[in-house]
Figure 1 (cartoon, one colour):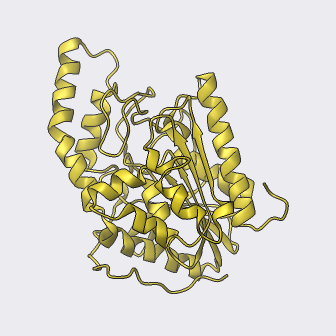
Figure 2 (cartoon, helix red, strand yellow):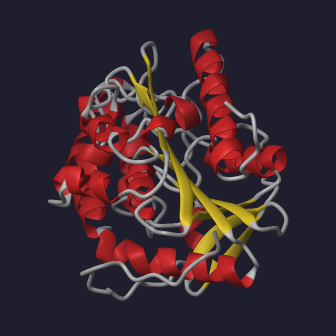
Figure 3 (cartoon, one colour):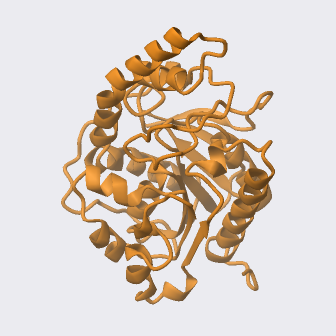
Length: 323
């Protein structure tokens, strides 16, 4: 099926501020952290912010798309994947590296738009405060670390406001700009991949007629819907294509086996193509932010990416015989 023009129903189109290159600087966070207290959309014990892998060199380019900055990688063709980042933004852990891997292994165009101005939800100052509190200042003494935590607590409301500010009325115009660019490049088939906050984006975009499938890694759909006062069950009802949800141990029951999402989606014509799998040893955020030096994390990250690629091969690329 080809890309169709589409309007988000009953959504007020809010003006979207332009995003500049200065927003891509994520504060240094040399170690993989575990969050002692959760962000509004992360569960307790989650992996905290992580810097891109040491020595990583991006294979794609930054491209302005009608005022929306996007990381774009892969060649032209009729297939594309739009990736939704987590609350820590475009440079969160291995997010860009995973985009590179999908583009190369699947032969598709991958687009990672920047949704949060300032690098993460709440802006650069908030992101820096969270990063330092979670260990982004090696060698800091007790009182300095306590100061970092106090600053993070002070900025916590900004993080929450940043998430709430990115409701569908704000996000939809950015998405429309990306789809217009894809049409111009001759793309006909689109899949969605979302991490954490990006899982909410994956569900929202999967309500479109021109999206063929969606994958969510440690998704936060139910928490985001609650914060935005959206009807999670109603969004599940509006989804038009197969979904795969890869949950961590402490993720919400709503997006796991037997939860609301599975009950609603299983009743749809494509219900048998939907996949729900919980990784019982993993913490929220493991796919793009977990420490690969830990054997179990490396194992389950590889498995999650294998499942993701196979799902896209079957439902986006339409390769027969893919399980």
